[in-house]
Image 1: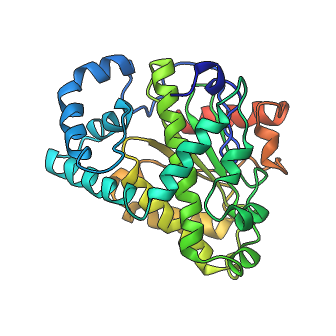
Image 2: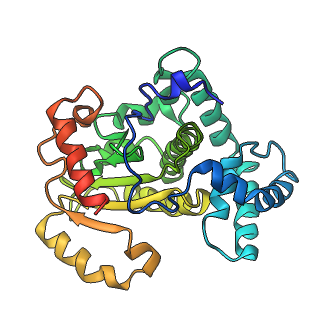
Length: 303
């Protein structure tokens, strides 16, 4: 595990920063201390670990297994999801997980977070990093200690990007991002004794109703769906912000058709990030822009 003095400083995925803690979030999967959750689920964790250890390089940290215990799935479903995850982690996802682990270890090897290895070790980084930067894709923390993953797909030159990579390669990049986020959330959960969740802030300003590259949108959707299966009990609300009027109306019309577990996590809002030109403005040194963003997240995500 990375030393606390490293992880509690500036962390970046494309950018991740760890801020001060506050009260427990309203959407938290559990408000109990992590130490209590680990103790209460010792038997289940050991059982899950036994299943995982049939595979090479099974995760050692208890937080990996605790999130399965907190997912409120029937035991047979929980075990099936773990089996599927382990097959992925030792198969097609092996290089993603190995790179993410090495990147986090390198990023926390000194007294402050070094983001360069995290970006450099991302899948297909030599191409994708030209088009996806911290200006358009950034993870920071809320005042309450959860991670807030922000993405502005409309600000990414998806046509140029997709002329150089495949849909599968872009999906791998975003799954790597989620793997790093998950690792950081688990480290923070153990450090703070509070279960850390991941909020997604999807700023759709600039997204083309017609045009753009459909394969990029499909890659985003595929990676999001896969991440929900790979990282149980991690995600909090998804904030869809700054939708054009026609998209907002359509989204709200069809939202009731989504499954209840998905529907209850979607929140629509105008305003957040609307005055932000570059997502680095909401990083820890962002001043007024960061303060306003954190106020907006407090108001929308935690109500």
